[in-house]
Length: 419
Image (tube, rainbow, N blue to C red):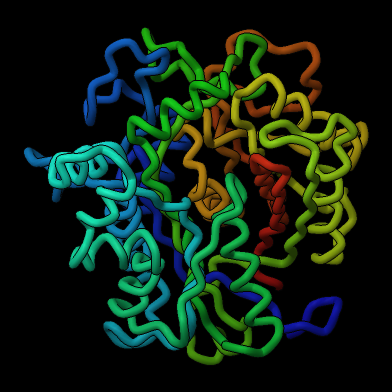
């Protein structure tokens, strides 16, 4: 079994997920289909005087009653959960002995304010020079913040092959991790791999940075109604965290070992622009190009796509540009599009992986998740956004869009198993 370019087909044999809606694929998928929101008030740190006080937080059992984990620790814990679920579902390898490499999409890591304050107090001096001196002998800091220790520890725990690859491409990170895994299998470098997207960036510093960009919703009174992709009154995205894992395999190798095939990653497309640190180029060429490249890579015409899992952040600019791109690619016959972010928020580095996972479940169950909070249609958004209520549909191929800050755009085509 080969694709139209003679490459091995790439199958998905395991999925794992954690979001603000819950732990595990089953809970997340059932709650998405029922239109539930995981957005709530932040209690992890003080939000007095902040413009935005809501997020899609994941409450980890291990930190209950103690100090909140830092972002790298949170990323590692959520990624590990999603990896365990996906590897168990794929029934591949023995415990701690996965027969392929790890591709980990995660946010850039840096010392957060509580750690810096602690180092400054220890040094008796808030200067960087003094804080650097105070880190002498702190192996945990150097491993985590300088040497990509998250990926190394996950690789050791799951026994993956070779050096783990850790990467970040802004909001496209999770999709980029999947793309790297797909290409490794297509090149014959492995017959199986793990692709992960994880993010734990709901901490004070990150929240303030995005707020200063005027990117966040300030609809704090009703958190569950704050994320409003494609709706007329949308006014910013809602930060969130989570993780998703796909176990990717050479299709023939997976069939030979009797694996259950959830679906295929049949196309990957990317396209960048360098127009602005946060805004897309108004000509839309990078967004349009990423979608077209994914379709070309899959060997599909636009009309073959049954549904689009949209990037759909809920910012005025992004949703407008995604609508523009959809019309440029699909014309008047655009398929339905919906945004998972209306329910789980924008999980940043995890978004592309989570949305790929949900796209595969859409194909499996032939059911489109809704875009909730769609109270007043925006006349400039001319797409069927599956408003508020999930619906049954015939779905064979899904396009999953991930459009990142800085013009980093990755689109994936997910497909059902060939007949």
